[in-house]
Length: 142
Image 1 (tube, rainbow, N blue to C red):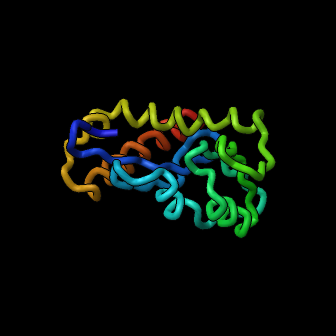
Image 2 (image 1 turned 60 degrees about the vertical axis):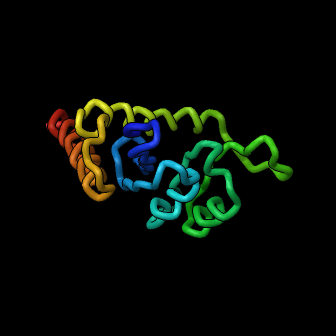
């Protein structure tokens, strides 16, 4: 997300609920691996939670962190994995809710174009967009 060609690239990491509403948000520099964002997001999980992630999050330490908190990881194995883990394709289809969240925040011009030069300001704009998404859902429920 953000401009590329040598400037202002940022990866946005999100933890959402089953409806695609954001719970936690984090930023990492564009050149870092996706798994580095997992350390900020995978805290305070509860028993019975199921964490859906893509292949970029297929690491033993990520799976251990999820399982230590009583949650279950549903992450597809990378091709080069020797030991295969339990994986449900049916549950994995629900990961599209996270992708829908990213699509929704890209509708906010300030987030999509990334005018902010500092990561803290950019994260604040993303959080404001997330608040607007939460408000839309709660407003329609009344």
